[in-house]
Image (tube, rainbow, N blue to C red; front, side):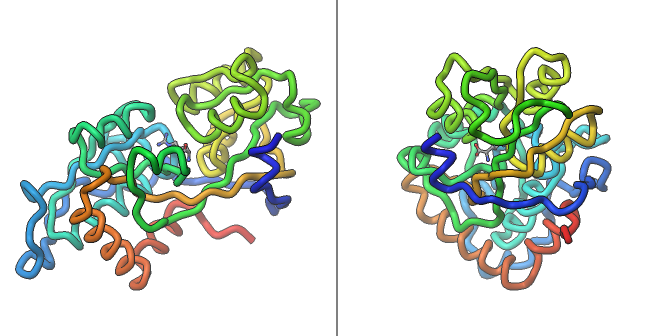
Length: 266
Ligand code: ARG
């Protein structure tokens, strides 16, 4: 329980959690505004290559046009616009994102990725642009009411996520079943193969809305910061992206992108 207890907050999620997200109109994944072209020196070829894992609505999902859409796609598009660059998005396994950064296959990760000290050994994180909360999804009527009840249970997670790391630390590898994405973990929960799923709150709300008979526990949560990741040593890009995020926070762009996908609660 150590990981859970350290940062845990008791919060009540007010009211029912209505969702949203998946049907929203697609942002373009190419940026052609080029507003600041004249002043901004171009980074490499002028295309910012973002890696993500588009199984994480409303941060990233594949829309009806088979394009990666969602909060991260739109924020990355806005960052690329600030940098005077085009944006290209590569959709890959979550576990492959940090290796792809290190090998130079991609320039940046926006994937609802939580800033953790372990990841900071391998990559650098920009300023945070959003907050996430680890929650527990259970079937309605489950005997699990809080993280204390997870001892000895079988917990589904997306492989390589913070949910995976925390649960493995706290309950042991034998009790944690890894899936390549959250939807598969939730499908296993619906089929009775596992007892619960630990995942970030916003995707959790989407998954629960898409399936009957599930609920999110409203007891205790781990709060995390999401940030973009950049290869260690790529300080030029890091500084530019931090400045872009700062601008996009100040001018309200990031808040309005988030509000488009996540209606304010309460
Ligand atoms: N916030 C969690 C983490 O960083 C989960 C992120 C999963 N993101 C995704 N695009 N599938 O580990």
